[in-house]
Image (tube, rainbow, N blue to C red; front, side, top):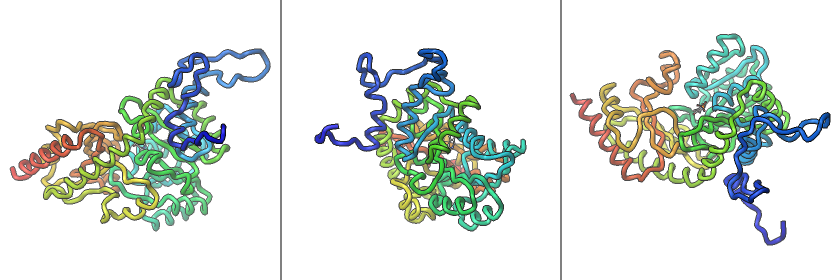
Length: 395
Ligand SMILES: *Cc1c(COP(=O)(O)O)cnc(C)c1O
């Protein structure tokens, strides 16, 4: 590089991932490699860089490199789903019947996975309130191999102190794994705060268009990265090349998307807070949110997920959710489109009612993933929904 060429920022490098890789025609965007297998140039001289696509694939490698860089990690393994990322992490890093400590209010699918692994005696699991340092301390009094944090939590947006939890986990010989799906690598980099491994459901903000299911495990050391890569290939949980190519395309707009996501979220929060129908809004950007200062310290923004309680019982919840025109009633989050979910009957239905109650997920809680639509359409839709809910509550 000559003296005059400016060095690219990590974000610019990530959103340009693969731009200089087509040596045949010089295509600007990278070529997709769907091939499952690659020729060995000669016999007995070891493997070529890519041999079989379950283990390694050039398109997946581009995405993995971009995500490792964005998360300030050493290495990354792209998986077929976010739960594939968690399964791979557990198999790679937890021994037989090893103990895992996880948040009681984690993603519903994660809760089910850990619960099922425990029921088969693959692991031992303790679900705790991860935002309460006293509970973390108490849980680590017994030996543990892995502590999972998910911050902000789903769907209550509780904030966990990553640096403090990493320190506690390390002091007790456990690894700290952070599910950073809700923040994306742009709003938080848990490895900088002491996490050993960061994982994402790339289905959400990283792909950002609700058209690919995928995951990634980013490791802070080469050794952890090799174990994760080995287990992903062994389990057959690596991501497909088409999915990787689409996810690379989604990643290119992540910065612009997140700016609009957050701008819209601020307006939506203001609208909900002003309503008599909404007694509680859970959003870490609010100064009275219990995790506000912590989120301001460890995140680069408050994100575009929020949840709120609606007065008026189930009829009001139903009236609010049915009849929306700019917002879809659907699971998932982090796409360009705004989505409303009712955790008790949708995202968190896999939890037992007792587990939901313990986690603080009531039947009148609604979660919003605020999209990047014109804000006027969102506020008009929400205003009408609140009026429907108020009428239903009076009926
Ligand atoms: C969606 C999600 C997952 C699971 O990811 P999939 O891609 O659906 O398998 C895990 N953790 C969090 C926080 C999620 O939002």
